[in-house]
Amino acid sequence: MQAAEGRRGALARVTAADARMLEDLQRTAFDYFMKLTRAHNGLVADTSRRGSPVSIAAVGFGLSAYPVAVERGWLARDDAVQRSLTTLRFFAASDQSGTAASTGYRGFYFHFLDVQTGLRTWQSELSSIDTALLVIGMLTAAAYFSGATPAEAELRRLATALYDRVDWHWAEHAGAVALGWKPECGFLNYGWQGYNEALVLYVLGLGSRTHPLTAASFQAWTLTYQWENLYDIDLLVAGPLFMHEFSHAWLDLRGIRDRFMREKGSDYFENSRRATQVQRQYAIRNPRGFEGYGQDCWGLSAGDGPSVEPQAVTGRQQTFYGYAARGVPWGPDDGTITGSSVVASLVFAPDIALPALRLMYGQTAGGRGRAVHASGFNATAGGGVAAGGGAGWMSEGEFGLDQGMIVLMIENFRSGLLWRLTRGMSCVRDGLKRAGFRGGWL
Image: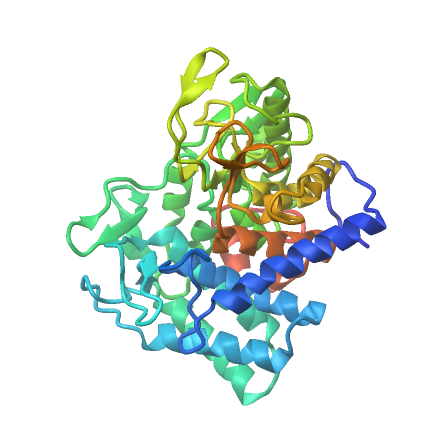
């Protein structure tokens, strides 16, 4: 197996057993979208748990996963095109009135939708980042399905129209790009601050030909960045690992730099490699004394966690947080590991991610690979079965965002497919250039 072309960072030998493991993990993760996508509207459930609403971000991951499935021979091209078209047709015709019982407003969409009607549910917010993840999925499908058939031509036309409809500039509010908006109260109180997963949002917003973000909005965001030295490693800090990973599922950030990274002599891809190393160092040190942490068991990120009574851990009462964004080195940390974040680290640091994946994949509790697909596992918390088969806890069901990252990042590790597709998008190139990126493939 060949790793992605030009992959930086320490190399790792990928054995035949590793190749089989990655194929199994990727194919099993893709099956989530085959099982949890509604046939009549193309919407994807947030989780496999009964009663789950639609996550618009999971829809974006599903649209991006179809090209992978076609390339790998898991899904016929015509079937993938029709599934993608069903989704895009739904959003093109969706209620954009912005009322409490609509699908979206100004080209943005509510975070959670009803699986049957596609209307807002859970009183969720109009989400800027989740809309961006949905839109990049639409554009990815359009870039891959480049044939001359009427269906593929319609797919590309709809994806372009839906992207052009997003009023990114409207989302600039009070000096920042807003996290979200609700019909009951308007913009949420907080905008994007500190380094996080929003890079793909800014690139799409800056690259828009209809309602672009201002270049000043991106520079204002980078002014809130925090550069630190952790365990003798210099990096741009974001505690949860997913913040260093999500944008990289689509954006090839190897060797291209904005003003901030030029000043630091680094780039965002290298920064994610360093963040992966910091995660491993934290687990080795294990300052809070959790079970299972070590050089091959790390990965604090956003995900499901135990909701059990506090218990004594190394002389203190440890609280468990349920679903939360966990991070290092300042927490929160309750002993919960997210396996998909380790999969996503393959492209950055395969030398340390592969050994951790081998360990997690080989655990038998709940079935082979279960510890990787689960949204979280915790060997410290009681009330369930841990990754190693002993006392502990493991998340029930699966989450669409986790499975999407597994599909996309394994593919980027294996072939670089998603990166090649987005490098060919004029809106991505334009957005990166307007953000000040130069060098490399750009």
